[in-house]
Length: 269
Image (cartoon, rainbow, N blue to C red; front, side):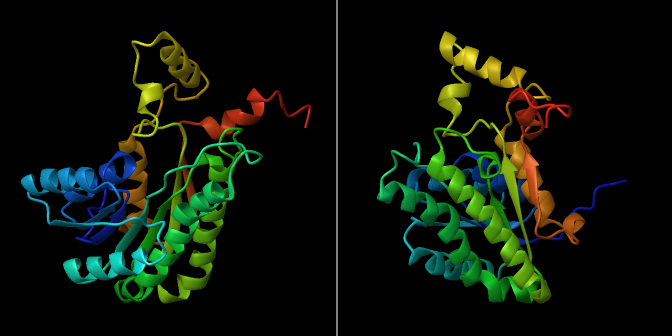
């Protein structure tokens, strides 16, 4: 069946200066959508905007630290002014504060919640009237850590789990308004946060880590930002018009091998 090309939509994309957010912006621009990009990294954001403009994209940008509770409202107002409305909110910004729960400071724990959960809630709340009038949607970037705890990512895992439930709650409450709310949870993916581990093949230790990670994945490869971006665009598009309250795992099959890797089999459960 031929893929339906989506009508031109107005996207607000956070965390757009690099990684998954940048990939979403590039693919959305290639489909002819209008974009407003957001990031705390002003230089990276300007570079992405300039590159997309050179390709003929209709794009604007605004710098913001979305951990500041005053910023989401300002960002949405800017986007609506620049785009003339809003069809899709892609809440992708999220920088993890790593560490065990037993070692995290209160400030680090709160920082995880602020950028991953609270910012998405505030952005969505500010955008609600515009999304409702357009029959729009919210797509948030979760993480496999929101499904499965990982030792060095205590606060991050808790925050991403909270984000996944936030999206489901929004889907329940806002469905009658015609707003769809979904999330995409990446597994191991090469982004700015992980490329030092996965990309330096000249370092024997890092090469061994990547090879080990890939050998444990059914698809035998680490994901790329574009893999996740395509899933986000699917959920934002017309082919997902009957999908809401869903978290789509884009993890190369990592989630299906976690139990076998822990020595759990059907006969031992």
